[in-house]
Length: 95
Image: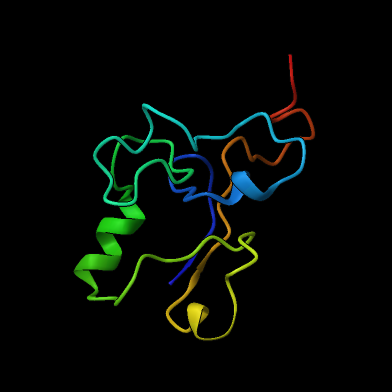
């Protein structure tokens, strides 16, 4: 499964972007997630995590920007989603 999108499906890519102001790697994010705060903009699993479970994938889809995402980690897919992403140059820019 290869994932593209915004904060609705971001699973931590923004944690690895330099100067990102849109991160979710602290409490209360991840309060109900087994791994704790992970960069998901939710208190638990996002829709991609649930879909992966329904498809019986062995692990959560890893974030593309995570330096440890390589080799066998990407055999079942990778997540490119980034919170604050959009098609306009001003999307995600500080106001």
